[in-house]
Length: 101
Image (cartoon, rainbow, N blue to C red; front, side, top):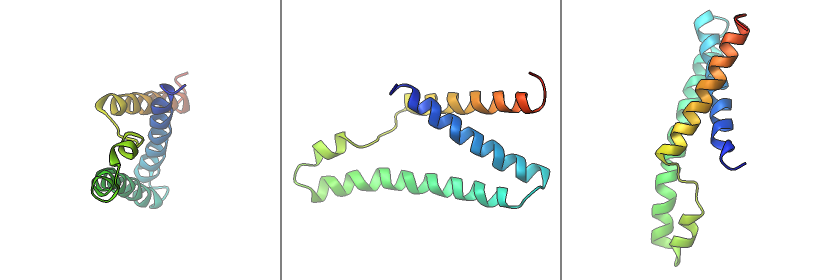
């Protein structure tokens, strides 16, 4: 089950991006642009938290190693899994909606 989580999360984010890009490209809504900007800013904020929290923990908590080990620290394998999930979800949804299946 734990191995499926990055694929599922990547799939969900891929579908969100597909929706935002579709709204923007088709001119249905300018909300797509703001949603994409929010999506990018949320990831920038997450990266900042991933960097700042361990540094603060290492400096201000007496036993930081225990807390740092429990934190979510993405690896390249994790990123690859999320991108595979996103790609599969977007490709399947796109092909299905355009009637190729």
